[in-house]
Every structure is written in structure tokens, then in C-alpha cells.
Image 1 (cartoon, rainbow, N blue to C red):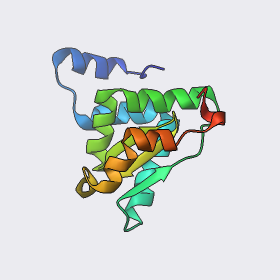
Image 2 (image 1 turned 60 degrees about the vertical axis):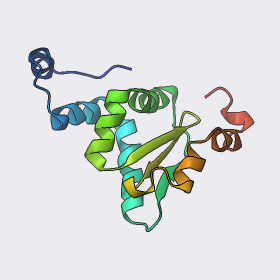
Image 3 (image 1 turned 120 degrees about the vertical axis):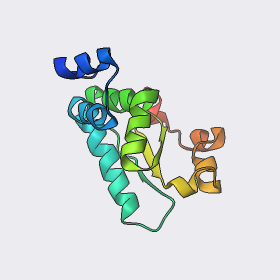
Image 4 (image 1 turned 120 degrees about the horizontal axis):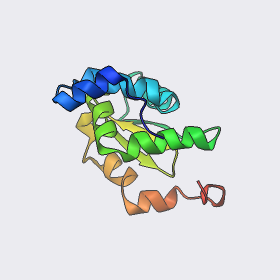
Length: 130
């Protein structure tokens, strides 16, 4: 799934003049499911005192799963979302999205979530082909 880039934004990119706000707006409109998952996870984090909030509900279809993969596998998209929301994002199993407070990055909870052990413990047979 590619981003739906307007001709105006493409022209700006060709000139080297793309703001984070314009880029993030393109991501928001192009990947609405991913945007909803990430923004709701960040909202959950803001309402808590914890170091992280996560979303573990599998997407309803492969199209939505593709949006999450596109958003979180792209360094530019992920970085833009992290800057926009002021969090560090982490990802497991093609659908588990976590938002961490910047102060939690490199702490024990973050290291555990992003570790090989954390990934292995988050496996299940029904997610094998996700």
C-alpha cells in the first residue's frame, strides 16, 4: 500500500520543501486504519501513568494489516508519526503496536518489549501467517 500523494505535495517534495505536518497529513489520509490504531494507542498512553500503551487487536482484513505494516516498516513514516505524537513506537506480530513515553525508551519495559525474548513470548499459532 502506497501513500496517496497529492500533486501539490509531490511538487513540494520535488522542490525539497516538505514539512512534517504535510507529510503526516498525507500519512493520516492515506493510511486511515494505521492512523486510528496509532492515535488511539497514543491517547491511551496519555490517559495512563504507565510507560507504554499497546494495541493488540488483529486488523479486520489484510488491507488494514498492510496499512500497519506500511506505517511501521517505513523509517520515514514511523519517524514522522513518532515526532508528531511525541512517542516512540514499537511493533510486534504484524499488529501489536505500542507507544512508549520518550522517558521510557531504553528502560527495562522498552528493552523487554523490543527484545528477541519479547517477540518470542508474543507468538501464537493463529498469528503464524499474519
